[in-house]
Length: 195
Image 1 (cartoon, rainbow, N blue to C red):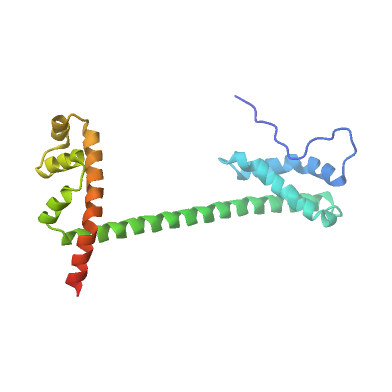
Image 2: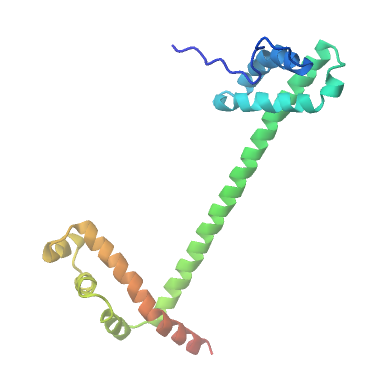
């Protein structure tokens, strides 16, 4: 079993005189790692960032914090560590909610577009489809005509000498091109019937 890597935010003294805050940070760093490892079970890669956040807040309040006794300092660091962890959880939940909302909007838009497309193609007839087929490339037109005759993908694949997956791709592209060719006609007829 591998041992945990030694994480630290503040390096040990290098022989040069350091500030009072550096000594404070080195003293309480192991405590902060211990506290935050308990909170961050399953997301231990964030422990070092959270320790850094706590020490940054301590530095910002250092003028007051340095006057407190060690018990009060430890209590304050424990509360700040918990708050930093909870803040990160709230941000993650908020981001997750926003992403979920965006995905739901995208799905709703696709479903609405699909319903509108289905309704639109009710204004297109067989003659319109035959006319639109002339705009397809010979390969797409042949594949689509065989499909309209009720042939299976595997039978079309054998007839045209391609893989069944290629047949599916050709039919998909044929449908897209036919929709573009027939869209104007379908929209015009829909407008006329609604008047």
